[in-house]
Amino acid sequence: MELRKAYTPAETRYDDAAALYRRCGRSGVLLPKVSLGFWHNFGSGDSYERARAIAHYAFDHGVTHFDLANNYGPPYGSAEETLGRLMTDDFRPHRDELFIATKAGYDIWPGPYGNWGSRKHLMASLDQSLRRMNMDYVDLFYSHRYDPETPLEETLQALVDIVRQGKALYVGLSRWPLEALKTAHAYLLAHDVPLLVYQGRINLLDRGPIEEGILDYCRDAGIGFVSFSPLAQGLLTDRYLHGVPDDSRMAVGKFLKREQLTPELLTRLQQLNVTAATRGETLAEMALAWILHQPGITSVLAGASSPEQLAKNLKAIHAEPFDF
Ligand SMILES: NC(=O)c1ccc[n+]([C@@H]2O[C@H](COP(=O)([O-])OP(=O)(O)OC[C@H]3O[C@@H](n4cnc5c(N)ncnc54)[C@H](OP(=O)(O)O)[C@@H]3O)[C@@H](O)[C@H]2O)c1
Image (cartoon, rainbow, N blue to C red):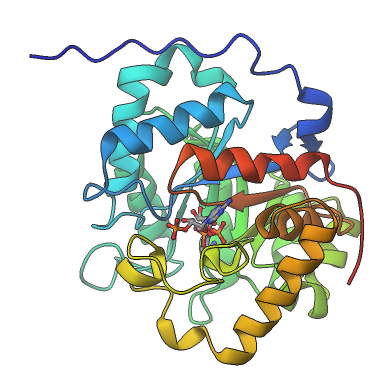
């Protein structure tokens, strides 16, 4: 039987700390400007050795923040199981160097308690997540989506109690509309569990949270903002400029559809690619840099299907400011 090589993290992993880390709102937490998302490429159907190589590359370069959710995989829960395996194989001695987030709110098990924002769902889901990840606590626990049916106070008090129970150190909200976000911010402050971070999608193709005033609100309120799908699932890279590669998310996944790549969008991406080239950057690097230079942004949660992609994306932390 082949023995797995033991992992020794790079001693140089914090050498670029001054450029890499940014304070998360008005808090004591520093997050890497480029964090690693576990939505794709970390499920049980993906290569464990490749997932492991990506996670090693991240940690070796100071990317201490891993973003998960109960339902990442596929199948649901399996990305958390992969992280649990990585903890056992490699990261247990470095637990205190990592900032691990998970979420609940989308469907994960059948029946009325398997999704949305009830206390029942949030508490049970986090307990399941901790078992899968082989951890006593997470650093950050999110309500993954706003639930228009459950009283906000029930969801928010569950978040407060989760922190009081020591199962999460901080709480966050993802995809909540502005008015509910304001209510949540006030409620959580009043209960001594300040909202650490808001997670929303901002990228060169989707400026929703900017247009809705959410980014400005977070900045003024001292709430960090992390942007998910900063590369629009790979559209804002060189991946689709010359067709749809067989191993790409568009070819193999179900969340990025071929119909999304219209001739108009392709022309726009090609133009953006030319702009990036004139800056001496890849399209991915420029797309991430644009987000990172929006006032109020803490981090981009980029996905990667190889360590090489992550290496390219990390260059964005040094990119010059610019605007479109
Ligand atoms: N809160 C929410 O509701 C929510 C929703 C979605 C995502 N998220 C979080 O955000 C994270 C990132 O989302 P995402 O995976 O959609 O991220 P993304 O960064 O927009 O897209 C990642 C994909 O882009 C391609 N890519 C990345 N770097 C590249 C490079 N340098 N060159 C060429 N291609 C590159 C890869 O696709 P290929 O696989 O084709 O190589 C990769 O899987 C998730 O993992 C998750 O943690 C949260």
